[in-house]
Length: 129
Image 1: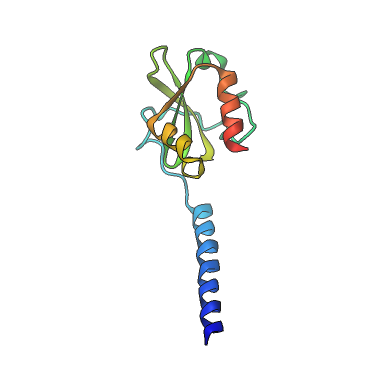
Image 2: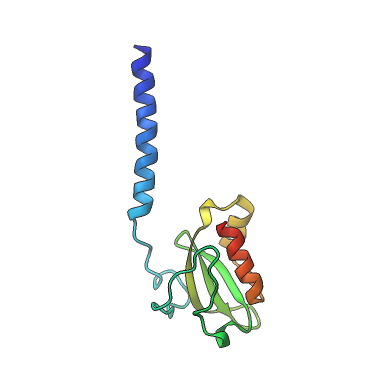
């Protein structure tokens, strides 16, 4: 009888893990128009992944700084003005904020400013690695 309970318990654990992974993979991302402060992102550029650069984003939108925040559970990158106000969403990355270490997750949920392109690329690479 004890073996039966072990099999049921481990079977339920395996089912829960598989179902959770399946659910995360099939859920479409939330619409950015209801969450973002500016919904004018370009749909022609691919989303940022770990190690990718911002080569497709025009250079003139990257001169003043970047604002990183949690948007729908994923890390969003906005261009910002000189005073740090988010202006336009550049990309919605494939980095899930809830999977980051607690300090990083809290930092991005509150909003985080980065002032150089090199610092942004390094930060995205470190978070995705």
